[in-house]
Amino acid sequence: MTTLHLLASIFVAIMLTLDIFILTHPHLSLDKYLFFFLSFSTLNFIQYHFNLPLVLFVTLGINSLLLVRFSKKIYTIFYILLGYIINCILLNVVGFAYNMLWNTSVKELNADAFLMLTTEICTIAVSCPFLYLVRLLFQKYLIGIFEKMNKKLITFIALNLLFSAFLIFTLASFFDTLEITHREYFLMVSSLILYSVFAICMILYVLYTAKKSYEAQKKVEYLENLNEYTKNLEMVYNNLRSFRHDYINIMASLSAYIDEKRYDELGTFFYEYIFPMQKNLSQKNSELNNLLRIHTLELKSILYTKLLLAVNQDIEVNIDIPDEIDSVHMDPVDMTRMFGIYLDNAIEACLETDHPVVNIHLGKMNQDMVFIISNTFIDKGLSVAQMHKKGVTTKGNGHGIGLHNVSEILNRYDNIYHETLIEDGLFIQQIQIS
Image 1 (cartoon, helix red, strand yellow):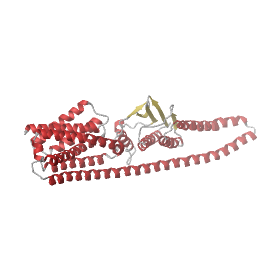
Image 2 (tube, one colour):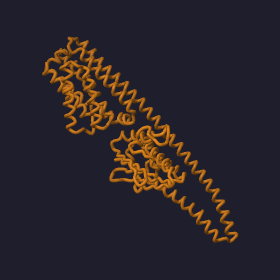
Image 3 (cartoon, rainbow, N blue to C red):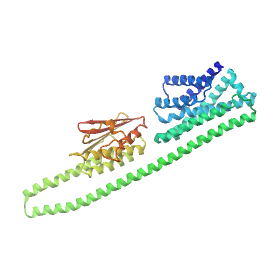
Image 4 (cartoon, helix red, strand yellow):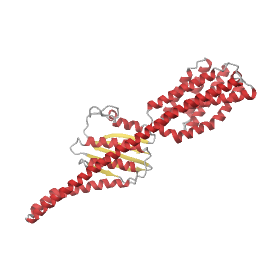
């Protein structure tokens, strides 16, 4: 019996390790797969030999968490659970085929090493293309949803899959030592399949609802950005009206100096009041014109909106965009939220200083996009690590969420490097997107 338990443990470990290999892409290092094989073999042997069904929770749960840690992708928590459910269903379907063709009972399949080996091999042969199809569906339809989902919802779905896997194992194991007819075997396998389909359909419905919620949130954020953009356009229009009024007054003043031939005073008036105004307007236009090198509409929109707001608050804005920005490998909503938070913080912080300055650099380094946002600020004693914690702020109640939200966004991407620095009296955010 010990030998059979050992063989069963090894076969199941091979199947589950193969599941991880097929579903994970890019693949993990070889030592990680060896680790999973040894973990599955050991825990499965303990479960079978000592008849401890609850060990299955440990086997699937712990290894799923380890897979997330090794792959650094939270959605991989579903891979082992889905693989186990698929293997369990297909193993019973293959067993039913044996039962129909050669009248082999479940009890005989579990008691004979050769039959056990052949059913496992057949199951692996059937499951490989099936799991590859699951991986394609994940990559095409689901990974994008998982990357934007709340961690609590992902945990809820993972727990449902874990309990579904345990229930399927329990239902299938109930008939291990019984002599059942073809009809009873068929009903058992059909029940397992129907339950699995029902559980997966419920999870897909939750994912569909989450996707719709995300799309609704995307529309709300788009409208909020549009509203803010409109407000800034109104501010520009009001500034133009004010400038037109000032222009009329300036012309009247100039004509008065000229009419009275007070040319010395005219020169003083011009260089003290008119020339600085012209210089300021030219500086504002030249800086904002740099945004013409950005061809990604969402990025150009959020930068133009926020920097226009900064310019209208008499903040010195310095924009350096030496390269053409054609695309950013990041979800548009996440990108808009990230830059919106960074620029809002930069504007708010620099306004507390005597000489408010916001500097923007966008460029390319090899194939990567590099974004650097820096601003003057007053150091209030918070460390960089503290600033990214939820609720930590120097602004009072209701603040301290922005940088924490950005951290959660960036944690969903493995192609983004981010660093926060304080140098030479400037607060600096550096983002590199590969």
